Length: 297
Image (tube, rainbow, N blue to C red; front, top):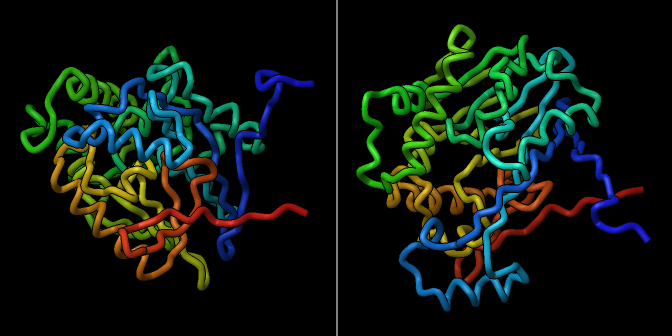
């Protein structure tokens, strides 16, 4: 019998949205060894323990999937975010090998749209030698986001300023530099390529962006890091210290949850369990994540 280590998965999940072809590509998994204080910093430990136990999740750490969305219309090959790259964690940085499994070379990527500039979203633009991975791509990021990280002193006064935020600041600056000649800044509300609608969703970062992908009568909402874990769907007010503005992050999270539940739109989340496609259901107690059902033949 094969052990888990012997099993090699494809690393991607393909699906259609109208005339667009999409794929969710795994970049690996982010493991956070202690749940608090990064997540739910002000919540009693017993409540958190009960949630993880009732959700059949391990209680000693948080595991966040690293999922990247690939979109092609036959002319453009687009990535929404570029993954962690090789500098963040040995359990991440799998994007390139899984792109190859999909049959796509980094040189075939024409555009990369960043939802925000945290390390696990921009780290993949360079390899271990600091050379561009996606040499033929143009890059896009929110002007608000870019100005925040490039400012003399990024404002974390409404969040948590610590060694991790210092690392994030330097990481963003180091990774903007190799792509500065190819970097395009978009407004808080913008459209790209005729099928991407960008919407300002601040809190996680000042320029954090959610993206609605449209083709024909079909839509998919890319919520980026609005809620990185099912815990923050069921308890959006618990919050997390990764957000540059803790309270605004909660407000945006609640707004997006309400909108998704009322419209019943399919959405994609960067860090929810692979392939991270599902719906938000409103219940008497709050909100609940319903994974989209898929079938094989």
